[in-house]
Length: 450
Ligand code: FAD
Image 1 (cartoon, rainbow, N blue to C red):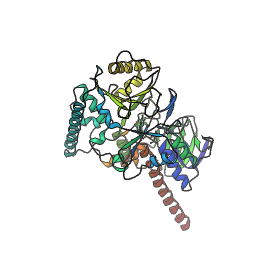
Image 2: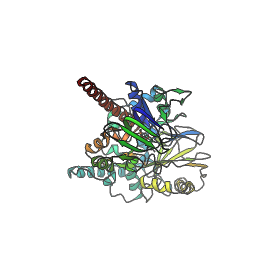
Image 3: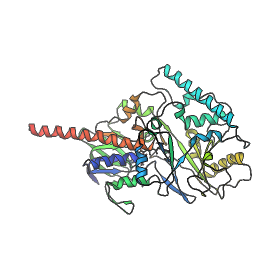
Image 4: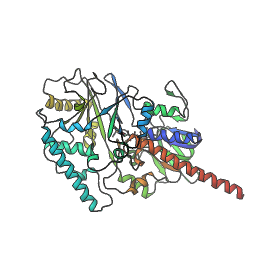
């Protein structure tokens, strides 16, 4: 089969949907959205677990309460999404050692301050060395040795970098974070956005301009247009393409470009790191952990960095659900993705029994998302090197002929976040609209000359 459209948007995550909406709002209705999976939402994904709705991907609206208003927070407020304030700052005072003792707050605060100071110092050293690009955040690691140092090093670098260097999200939009705790899921916002320009009925999208289960494998592009081929053998023609696949997918060989992408493009794509972030959910028959808003998060200090370090209880979000969440990243995420969930459950229970004693009940259910092994994702979000010039992100974002790039990884200020994806989609479509208008003007003057 073959069909032709003005614009094909590849991917129906937040950036693809926001890009499509801007086009539709500006009169480009001849569009087609091709999505590899069977749903819209991408890395915004809920699942029923233990009687409630849990978020396997994005969980927080980050950056609220500041001078400027976070657009995702505005949309969430408009549609009445249920959220809960999360106070990360207490986590450092709930650090358990392997015998279940909580480190005295003075020791924790002191270790924390040392870690922040040493990271700031290292950052300054790196900056004064004036290297163009260096590796990832790992370069900033202090010489952490003891379990508490390792645990703090982990939270600092994998969660709270804001204390070391300013992060635009918190500078611009404020330092508060709200956990989405809504049965309809974070993805409800995407459906509400889609409703504005796609045909829907009773919460379902019926518009045939959205095609699900369409895995794009080839983009053949020339000065005249783009031919898009999908895994099921379909061929689609378009004047322009907006590609919103993640940085991990761009680094993989899922999509073949003909002709191949230029060297400056592939070089830039290769320079952006992929962060793997895994939230493991555990359901218990009853609660055995301390509760209260100052105890939403707790830390496990182990001699292996990142070994089931960061814990959250869902009691504030979903009282009575008896669900705990433990977050793993990068190497630990990949390790756990490769093993059986039973193995992971055993490890997590070992850690919990260290903290809360041998008599606690075993979890009755476990959920382990696999973002790294998902070929439509290949990781959780982009992570630009700490010292990295704007050139890299601008090259990743820059169009190649008629192929325009979008997605959270193309957002210079907010990469890695939902609002980054949302704003990137708007940005990319605005740039494309300008290009289309330029094209139209040129064609008009050509026909005038004829
Ligand atoms: P995506 O949502 O990935 O959309 C791209 C779409 O393209 C996907 O639907 C994919 O299936 C599709 N696709 C890929 N390849 C193809 C192909 N070849 N053909 C067709 N379709 C294709 N952000 C926050 O703000 N707060 C958080 O708390 C937060 N936590 C996170 C936790 C996790 C575990 C993860 C994974 C992410 C988290 N994020 C968080 C980041 C946030 O989810 C993303 O930045 C954002 O959702 C990305 O949107 P996107 O449109 O750029 O990409």
